[in-house]
Image 1: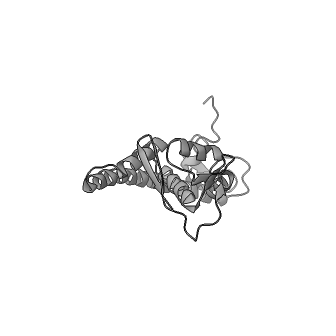
Image 2: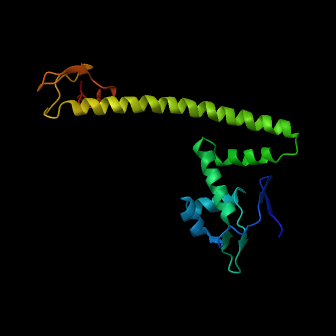
Image 3: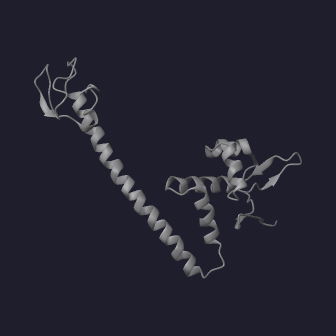
Length: 181
């Protein structure tokens, strides 16, 4: 069997031949269900040259194989680290450019290093938010008999029921403040 090749937006994409481990071809709805994407998203990927149906039925229905699902999962993973679909097109074009392999690898490494830097910053911020949420939950669990909060204009809270005094969590700072103050 020949490998299927398509060229769109100067991006060359090759899909491997189906193997014995591949199950029956999937229709677009089946691929959408398997990957968690919508049929519309899959059609967009096809339009952009990121995904190529393995074949079409006589009625024009797209048929996909397991390699297509793997491609969709790969696209999702790249989107999760911050790549847009046009950037994924560029990434594919770079990976298949006729340049010297070392230069192509340098370009790819620089792009991935940049993504890692951004991802690390996001993870640091998420860690901070996680700590703030944990502190807030601990604070809210401290006194369950309070019917209202006293002294809401201060960052240090004094419980009107039990007299507990501790720093008010930042996630609650503005919760009970009146809008006219």
